[in-house]
Image 1 (cartoon, one colour):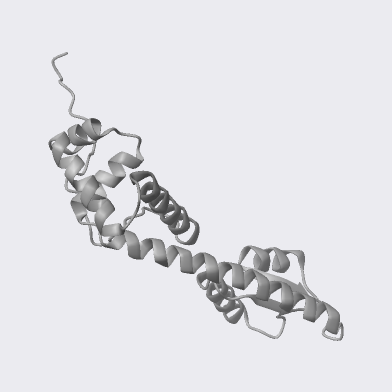
Image 2: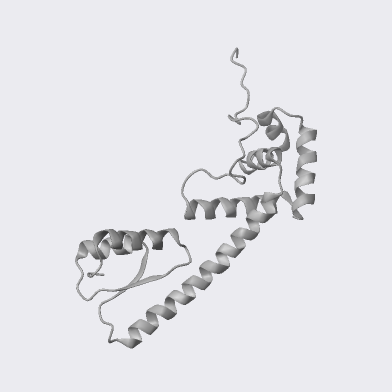
Length: 178
């Protein structure tokens, strides 16, 4: 670590942060508290201070292999969820978002300015297309994917990155006169 230039260290840390399936184990016999803090916040999996301790190296590598396997399985599940939700049309995605907010068919219809029967038809189509048994299963899949995206890339979550909601505000129309 100490033989690397500052820009090389930052580049290494940035690579580790942007690669969820990469474990970075650093050998650094002499390390300041600031450097250690920067490493750990930057995604370094482990810091070793002696290369001669083969048991510590083996333990660190073994532990990271287990963690990477868990991450690989988790990422595979997220890809599966994304593939399931990718078949939904933009309007079906809007309806799913409204339903995920706890809206009933009738409330979702009001939010999207469509009829409740149209919401029912879209719900049936969503289940048919995705092969899910219930809307609850579909909502769980959506929630799992949203949580994964938030964990990997904080920011707004959309199923289709180019999709814009059919109605941006998704708020119920209120009668201003009352």
